[in-house]
Image (cartoon, rainbow, N blue to C red; front, top):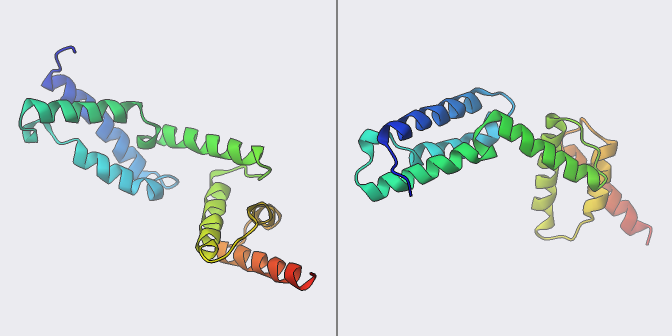
Length: 155
């Protein structure tokens, strides 16, 4: 393993910290990234606070992971969202923007809470979302429950 210099760690840490600051100020992605940012800030102390070679190597490893991860930059978060949207589209859910992805996530979270004690049709839930974009997660859940009660009455 090549020798790791403290100057190199400091320079690269500053670069990652700038990315984290940019991410924390971004209106679109900061909400979901707060825990990731806090975690990384704890794991990347300044050189002056690192005691011992073992702790320095661990911090350097965390730094390398952060530099290559999509979680810790706005551009990386966009890439993650694009992959999620592509996956959802392949399953028939027509999502075109980050806002719609967040709305869909909120709705599916409502459905997960509901599903703890119930079995539900996730395909129909996605269909209801596609047909009623712009409504809140709670309203979408009500539409699903209405569909479900009408379906059970028809049996």
